[in-house]
Length: 189
Image (cartoon, rainbow, N blue to C red; front, side, top):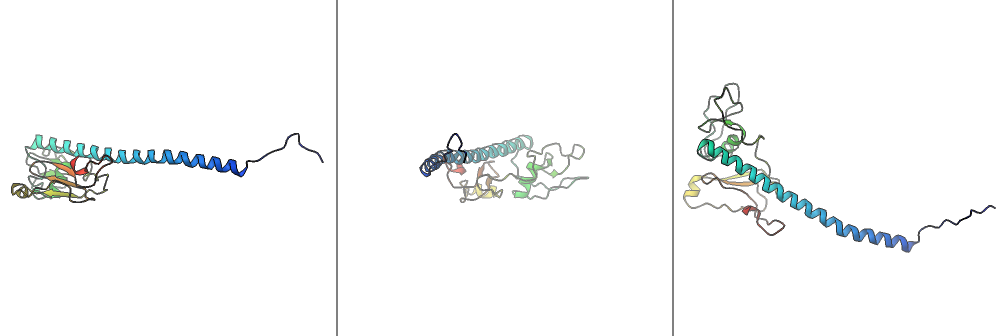
């Protein structure tokens, strides 16, 4: 019987256990780093969405003299397109005035219709974006009458809302009472 010039040896059970323990320690160090990165990215997305919507609302106010929702999005002659349907201070009016073409009166249309609707769209989507923390795009509107009566509660309503908006002041916040990774409430962003 011929023998090889060397003897092949495998790993011992102790060596395999040491390698497995080292891998587990490395995983325990690395995995939380990825988890915090995901949380920070979601919080940054929320801040970015808030900044974009607030900028769109400010531009709308500059061009129309009022915030979205203060007037109805209905009533315009919208030949070839679809006219807005939102009543004063309604979610439909706010969404349409931000996402469709509009005229000086805030009336909206899906098409600019020969210059009759020269403004907008201010948001290039057909709806408000989702709150990335809660995955909700639900909009709670604070009507002007409630604000005038002192019933204005701009803090979040709970831990899983979308957005909250005061028609009179134009204040737009995340409707979420939870805290971010630094302990700051989302509804104070």
